Amino acid sequence: MRRIFDLAAEAPPARERERAAVLIPLYNDPDDTTRLVLIKRPDTMPTHAGHIAFPGGRPAIGDEGPAGTALREAHEEVGIIPDQVDILGYLPPIDTVAFRLLVVPVVGWLRQPPLLVPSPREVVRTYQPSLDDLADEELWRAEDWNGRQVWFYEMGEDVLWGATALMTRRLLGLGAY
Image 1 (cartoon, helix red, strand yellow):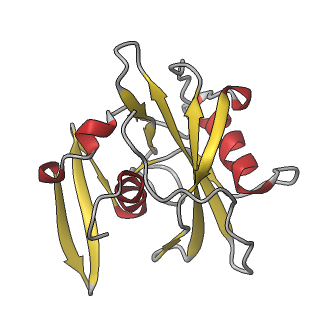
Image 2 (cartoon, one colour):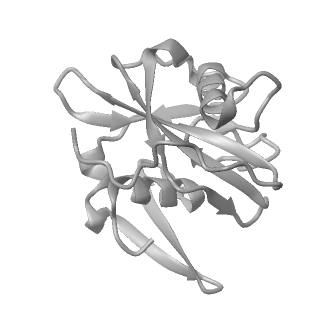
């Protein structure tokens, strides 16, 4: 498995801001290639419509912290079974600019390759890129958006960008994020 950088063992402390959590699901495929799971959200979603994202969302009553939220949402969105995920740690929270939402990235290891069952209401398609492909700096490009560096990664007919791209780059320890 490719080395993953800078994971915190504990979730960040709660803040007074509205929060969300995403699961960064990692697994080894039958060829022993480490992959992660991404989803494309439908254009009809009220937020982040059409974006490539990690499964996740806002907390619900009964969630046990960010990990509980991320696991519940990943199960609802793509059928990842929470009992089959080992939480490896947490990346630094991302403050989304457009939606003023603090997102906690929860990194989880799937004990076996997932049998994904996308929710038609929340997922248009799934992607399972390898970490080696995502770590290739030559496949990334950056743009300056009002003094903020925004990263982009082409995924077939779609583009990974914004908060999810930033989380992915942090996961892989890619510089200048």
